[in-house]
Image (cartoon, rainbow, N blue to C red; front, side, top):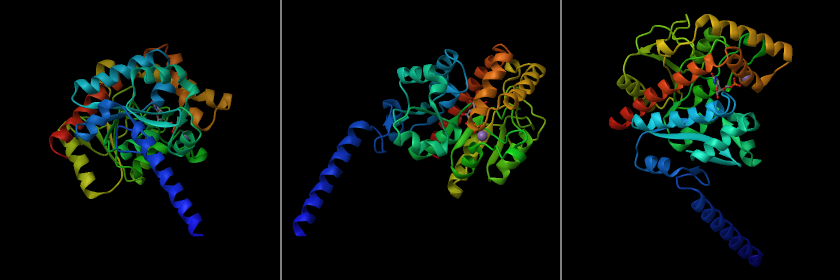
Length: 336
Ligand code: PSU
Ligand code: MN
C-alpha cells in the first residue's frame, strides 16, 4: 500500500508538472492554456483599457471579405481611441483572447463552417478541439473571466418575433443578466421583437441605456425604434460612472449601452423594413430553426438590400468601437 501510495503521489506530481509546463508555454496571461495575444496580455497586466470583440459577427454575420476588412478596421478604431482590442474566438479547441491578423483571416474565410458558440457550446467546442466563433453570450462569458469589462459589437440577440410561442429568446439576454460585462451595441434589429427584448432585459435585471440624447432605444439600422429607452447617458464619463457603480454593488449583472447609428449612415427605413419582412417569411418556408435563424436572417437582409444594409452595418460597428474604446479608456483613467 505504501509503495502504491508513493507511486501515485509521484505520478500525480509528474502530471501536475506537465500541466504547469504546458500551460506556461501556451499562455502569456493569467489563465491555464488560454492563448492571449501579446498586446492583450501586456495591456491586462498593466491595467490598460481593453475592449472585447466577438467573432460570430465575423463568421455568421457578414460575408467574406467584408467581414475580414471590418474586423481589422474595428480593431484599429479601438486602438486609435485609446484601448487594446481583444477579439475572442476558439481556435482548435483553445480559447483565444486577441487574434493575430492571420487568425482573423482564417475565421473570416471559414465563415459558417465555424461552430457558432454561445454559452452552452463553450465546453463542447473546447473539449472536442473544434474551431468556433463566439456570440455575444459566449464572448461575454470569456471576457469576464479574462478580466475585460467592455465589449463592443454591432447588435445583440433578443426575443424573436412570435417568441411567446417558440420560446426563442437569445442566450445573450440571460448572459447579460448574469455576467458583469458592459456591451456596447446599436440596439437590436427589427428581425426581433424589440419591445419584448426590452421587457426581458428588465426581467433579467440588465441596466439599459441609450448613449446620447435620444429618448428611443435604437433599432440597429435606424437610430430610433419607436420604443423608449429605460435611460439615457449623454456622455462617456457617465457611462464609465455607471459601470463603476455596477461593479461596486457586485450585482454581477451586465449593462447594455445602445449607441444609435449616426443619422447620415442609417439605412433607408422602408427598404430595411421590407427586407426584414420578406426574410422572416423565409424561415417558416424553409424550416430554418434554432441557432440557424439569426445567421439566416442576417444573410437574407444583406442579400435583399444588395449590400446597402451591410454598409450601414459596417458603419455602426465602427461607431460603436469608437464609443466603447473611449468608455474603456475613461474607466481606466478614473482608476475604476
Ligand atoms: N445580431 C446582429 N448581428 C450579429 C448577431 C446578432 O445584428 O452578428 C449575432 C451575435 O453574435 C449574437 C448572435 O450574439 O448573433 C445571436 O444569435 P441567437 O439569436 O441565435 O442567440
Ligand atoms: Mn435562438
